[in-house]
Image 1 (cartoon, rainbow, N blue to C red):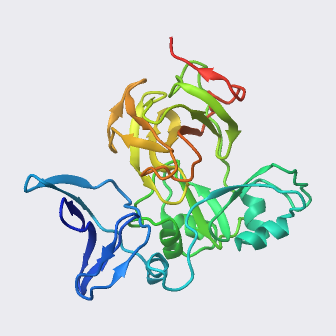
Image 2 (image 1 turned 30 degrees about the vertical axis):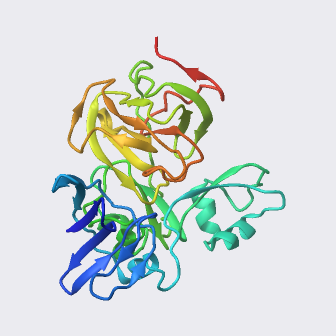
Image 3 (image 1 turned 45 degrees about the horizontal axis):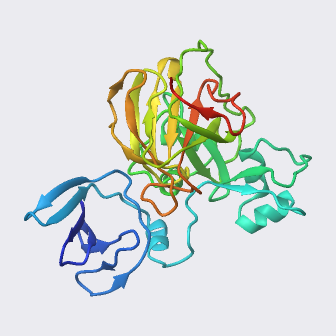
Length: 332
């Protein structure tokens, strides 16, 4: 059990209780203290799930959340012990003179990692300004489909199951959902690579999930960015069931809501300021699922340069795919 506690006259603390004592971790700008040793830490650690909030003695707010078991390598990186682990998938804009080799060396990943993540070959030519997806470690990305398990995914790519759990900061091996992007460290692409097919849906199956301006056309993974003011309502694009609504520490999407629709299609809503749904909720088309976020420094923003929604579709065509840069989505 982890506890976040802060009152008007007390230092905010996060205490993860273990069998051996207290481990403490919290995001900036809070100061962290080990209650046994009096040692202060300052580090960025995100909850894997939104905590429950409780009012204490009328003047304090406490948050409770189940703690996540981490390997010593990952835990050590959080507290500055050992090498720092870059945890998120990031975008990189190709600069003049860049090569696959130089980019790989810069991010300390293999060349095959960059090639596989971006559907490139060794003969591919890079263009200045071209956007590349960079994984946090050498390996590849797997999109979770129905029936997948951590064990089966690790076996498919000749990888270590525990490493998959660690790198993706999963609470446990069952903490995966259809449509999730999993980084498989040191994974080897099999001769028969997984095939991700697209379901043909009626043109009117989806609605626009938010009002705003298209600021980035179709990009990884089958996503489109729509910008507006932070706090703009976000709506589910089709009827479905909420799979997850929590902070995603790896995708770069910050607070993420994913919804399962018919035929295994999943919609993915990233950079949410607030999420008003929970796993298992049954949604009708147009139901509100939260508010747009993405402002740098804002809780749950993820990797973002401003307020926007990253809207992806896994398993079908994105309804925003043909909208040009600068197009303004406005409800009637």
